[in-house]
Length: 157
Image (cartoon, rainbow, N blue to C red; front, side, top):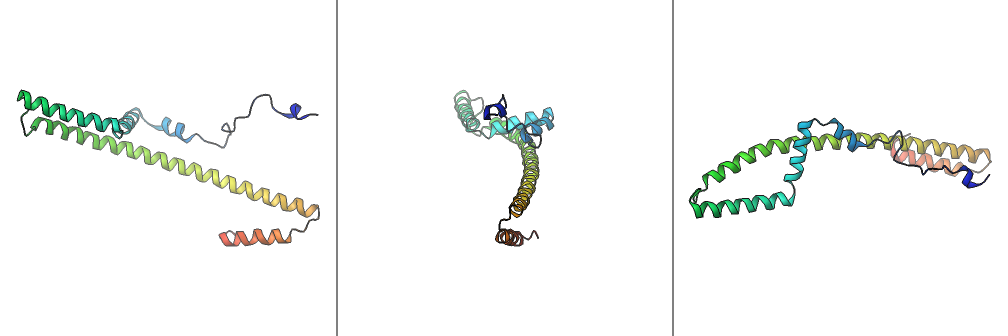
């Protein structure tokens, strides 16, 4: 039997593992339509393009307001509109921040689960290797001492 007989016909997708969760998709599915809109607005208002657009809008407003006397120097109407937009954006950003926080917490929980499984798997492999070494009559006393010392340093055993 050759290696090609054993190899699978299709490449193995390592991300398609039953214990690996797509946290981003899971979080996105949990959002309501309003939360999705708030997240999009919060993401876009933090972009440099949004800052540039706000600055250009205010300069254009000031120039037109002074030239046409439609909104003269104290720019009361511009200030009122700016304050209303800021008040609305405060709540939108708060919703977006809450969603980012929930996403980070979900990701941390999944990372903890994955790391716990990896550590358990590594411990099983370690025990298996020690059993194999014992069966083939290798001297494993120094390995057992090292493993015990590492475990004691971590406070595990």
